[in-house]
Image (cartoon, rainbow, N blue to C red):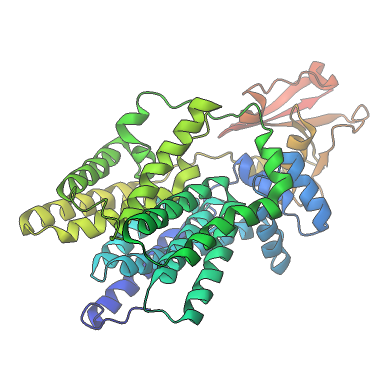
Length: 473
């Protein structure tokens, strides 16, 4: 992968191997420390491998207008090769999260042939934000990985010393992975727009022969419409979106507190980035420099969603632009190693690395549970004799999702546990458990409007974001 022997020496190979091993350990450690969020449960429900393809597509449309359908289809295929088990599902994002580290390092080396790829490897491998999404059954670790591949292939296809065969090959795979990216998440179009602008400016200012590259970039939205037209219409038809408009605090940190674990860490990374931008202000918008594309991605990742929020409705949230970490890590690493004053360079390196290590040690090794503890609740209920469980939810799809996940937990599939559907006649039962996942019920776990609301509550268990109560006649 790396060919320059002066840059990539034996000690660098050893160091890079240590980085990848560390990334592996940090992502596999406590992989199933927590149970699933509702969003993860929803993906788990849609990706049931026992369903036909049409049934899976229909579930995707019913659930979220097909927003996550491509990832859910991939997850369905993954489950078909293994077991339909929540703990198994976490290995798919883990794989993409791990692959992102060498891919991001390679992209950095593609941009600048120095040792900045090692610094990128360190910062990204220990970043808890990336680690956490490598442990969630959602699209974001895959989206991050595909965004890196798109950029690698984009730069590869631009090389003027490539043979015509290589240019077509790189262009083909660029279109393939970029199309996959926009199908995974519509925010990937921010990268496509940035790439188009980068090429367009090259065409205007440098008059380079890049018509093929421009056509490749333009083909991505055309192919997207052809393949995803039905789902695109469904998503554009969403009127009420759950995301809130950003407040004034956003403009002080730009989600850096989320990306880097705390307000202090967010301030450190943001101030370092601002300082590095100021120090390199004469060359950051140089169209001949590959860093210029990274700057475009960084700017438009915030600007375009904010403009849309003003025009129609709020859509900006940190995980939707997870790929913004690509330019942040690369630009910080390259610019730090470009600092001529060694005292300043080592000072910034010390601040960045020491604070990151301390913060991420706390996040990883002193981690507290933040997700609903389904397994703990089901384990407690399973001690009853032939327990019957009804799940509280105002929506039938939501109820199916929670029941499906509960059944597939470690103890939920025991034969003595009975999960009841909403139309089950439980009038003949003597007792029944009410399982309440608090966030989907507005934190209201009362037995209303069920007919057993006048029964006696004889047992109650409170756990993280979830409650189970036993009612008896």
